[in-house]
Image 1 (cartoon, rainbow, N blue to C red):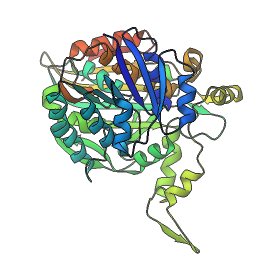
Image 2 (image 1 turned 135 degrees about the vertical axis):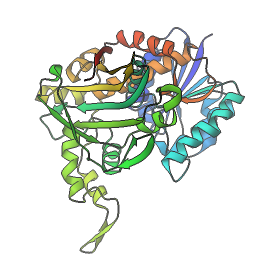
Image 3 (image 1 turned 90 degrees about the horizontal axis):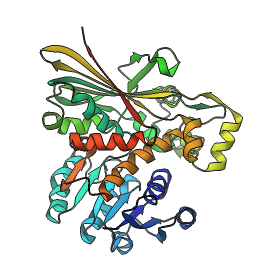
Length: 409
């Protein structure tokens, strides 16, 4: 049956999903919606199945009006609007997808995720619908890859999710994704699981070093970074991760190194300070001087023409545990196009390519009825068969896995 998809938010992620769904034979109509009418008109003009709509996400009724008749809502909006989108999806009877779990449902982020699982899950299930959260590159693709790594073990003790973003332009451009999100995540205490308990860890703290031949950088340092994955895995540690006791998300790269001294100097504080006769939060002042992540074709081409300092990176899962009574490391490397190759393939940055394509693969599976689960679940809760299908389709986009299983002395 031909599906109608509403894509809310047509930034880098939403527009990539729209382009991929325009190629899907079982998708008949794509409603591209945003508050920014210019952005809507731009993406609609590139597609054959799309119509546009202006939506005010602060008003649930505005979302409902755009969503009438939609089989699936893909939510690419800022987290603060996720409650409205979830409620609208339930009201119109649509499936639901987003790229990261919201923190807008409760004062505490963990409680907010618990509400998603325990309150919204039954609501979607009651209507016979599917909602899947956290479906970009991280969380999303990396969660599916972690499930693939854990499959090689009989029991799991420790999981590392490792991301190093080593794409660096000659111009001043610290971040290839939202600077406000990047700096917020970096300046908060991170989450980890230690001996089965969810704990907070110091921002930029607990460094580890790794070296991978294909990066060509020598050893790199990674530290703590506030991210979704340890929280989701902790909720699901016994059901999907074979009793894992320790879970870490480690991040590094040019943006990480740029932000670290700012944090140490107190310049990522969101508390207002008096400077002369002015009251200002240091975070806001820093953010004002950081350029937005590039997203337009001509802008990316200009950066490439100027030249790059480096075009490298990695996404790696390390899962330590037991197999046939032996200590084993199951190591999975996600191989994907860098900036230059991503731009040649699709006119996107490497960040936009991996996150957008990672999300579009989940949309493809929803549109193709590959998820039989009803209710709400996160991307780390899909079945082994769904993981395999996901990476079979990812390989067609140049996103592949290298799985290495070895004894861990």
